[in-house]
Amino acid sequence: MPVSTPKRPRIAVLADSDTRWKWGALTADRIAPGPSMETAPQEGAQVRPRLDGFLLRGRATPTPRQLEEVGVRADSLREVTAVEFLRAMTEESYDLLVLSLVGGGVQAMLHGLKHAWQDRTARPVVVTGYVGVVYEKLADGLLLRHGADLVLANSRQDADRFRAVYEGVGADASAVTEVALPFLGGAPYEGEHDPCTVVFAAQPSVPESRRDRTYLLNRLVQHARRHPEREVLLKLRSKPGEHTTHIEELPYQKLVQRLDPPANFRLVYGNMGEVLDRTDLLVTVSSTAALESLHRRIPTVVLTDLGIRESLGNHHFVGSGCLASWDQLDAGHRPVPDEEWVSRQGVAADGSYDSAFDAARERIAKLLDRPGGLPPLTPYYTPVTAPGYLPGILARHHLGPDGAPLPGAPAADKDPGPVRQIVRRAARGAYRHGVQRVAPVIRRMGEL
Image (cartoon, rainbow, N blue to C red):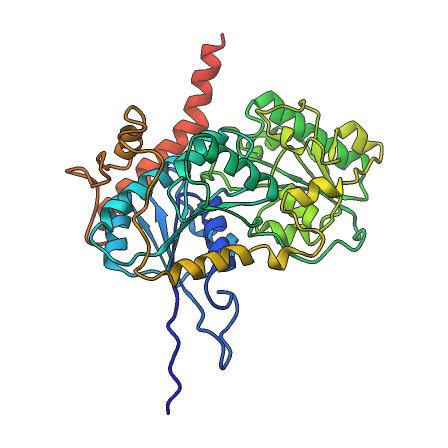
């Protein structure tokens, strides 16, 4: 008898920025049925899943360079509007769908999918979550994600908080599933490199003001001057003109032009994991890179120079043992992380990372095998529970209160022509110019 070929699982990921594409694609890899998408199928093994990527059109749609930096290869990748994506979900059949969007986008897609799949007896398992540390808008973001089959929590602490919010409003909390950040990994730190390398992980919007960003940059440059034997790197998320999940009005690339940094100071881009391969001290205000560094047991510092404040996000690291100032670092201080805190954050520095996604995979397998298929999506927000909030969220994605596309919603049956592509690029460029040049000028004038 011929050996039957197993069905190839199909996965779709919808993302709206480079960071969310990274989280969505890597999460899909971790929780997918069958072998890893980065592993070549072996004889007798399950068939490798197929990954189709969809990039939601907007101000932060990733550039080819940003997509390349993530390192995850999709079988197909295309830019879509919300309505185009919903149409694709009615025309194609998937086993798993990862919604890697801002909260309002997730909520709109849940209602849109509920409407699109109303006549279907089978649908994919729908998964969503957060790309990193959740330190603001907890209730708002969580309730906008309610209705997915799995709402992933990146740590035990987040899982407890997520369930408390859902249960507190009378919503079903069974979708909350504890995992870990999908981009952790790499070799454990084994000691100082030659030369010793200090890396500052910059963030697009933290801090926001020119004064604070200039202060951090000056301190980094001063550290390089104090230690000419060290390599001091400023790790940047994006190049000028590119956008990330958060708007960057004052890129460090422009601020550094006014300085005269020493030869051992450099700007670097690329995959964070590759930068961490040569890092001896990771410094940041509140970047998720701190968790990547702690996972590898690299000495890690969360700066207190600008205060420990919710607006900076570094309040999340209270109790971590990693809080310190540049003055302390310049004097030779190296923080020691609190093991209990690290454990609760899903950092899995104890070697348990390989099993962190088992529960999610098991839940997905059970849902896929559910007799009669899956029930309709049931978000907490409806025209009854949030009549003054939900319609506006849906309208931003050209959907009506019932999740149906509004008349005249932007959609296309074919790829945009040359003229449409030029107009779209020009509009996106104008937006970025307005954010990075015009808006700061207007704000400064308002402060006079």
